[in-house]
Length: 90
Image (cartoon, rainbow, N blue to C red; front, side, top):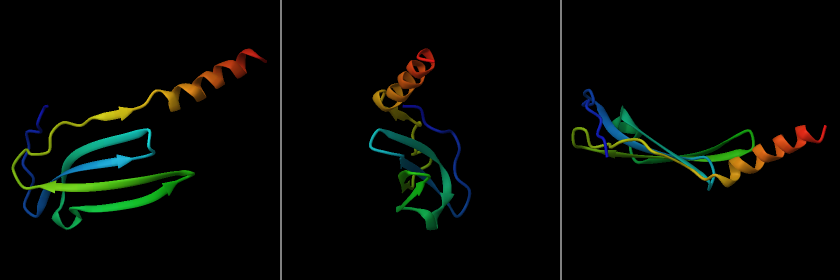
């Protein structure tokens, strides 16, 4: 796992965010943010998709490892195939 090479500025904390768009897609982000934003969870919706953002902080230098993206194929593949099939039937 690759580590970031920077150290956060004063009054900032390292963080790791899990951004869950649905039960099929989870995105992860690492970086620095104000310490007051640590260990909080936010929920909301964008159009019809609900999401949850969870932020967790760590205290050591370069402790927030590499980013990763997990995407399941089935929710993406289904609409793509439907779009292709609908253009062929025209």
